[in-house]
Length: 145
Image (cartoon, rainbow, N blue to C red; front, side, top):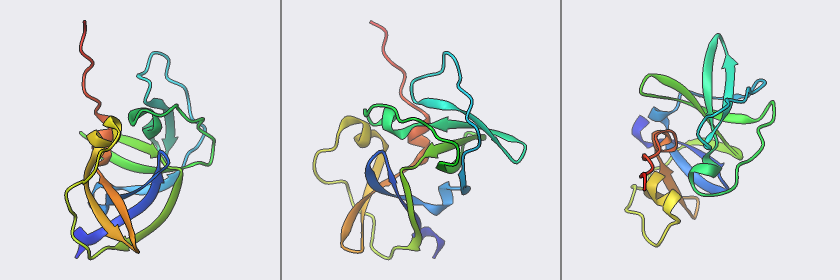
């Protein structure tokens, strides 16, 4: 039954579903600290319960302009390769069971969304992209000309 539990959120201006097994928690950001020389999708670092998290801006990952990080903003905390990350979320809507099956993504997505979306799922009359938080963290290496 837990495989049907999802976090529904709006990330980078798009409604998405994240499988609950990929999520540690949803928290508010403390004071973020800028990281000089970090890749553009790294919005900074913040500490929570004696642990430091890398703050990821999904807007940049999918090809949108970066957003400003505000203290108190909600983030989705995940572990990727044994490191703590937090995805900036525009809005956290719900944690719920969705009985509909995940289906293949149909239609054309922007390249950034095509890389992070794994499936689609129907929920309350709307199609949601099912995304893997790890895809927001591990960007493909840029090719050197």
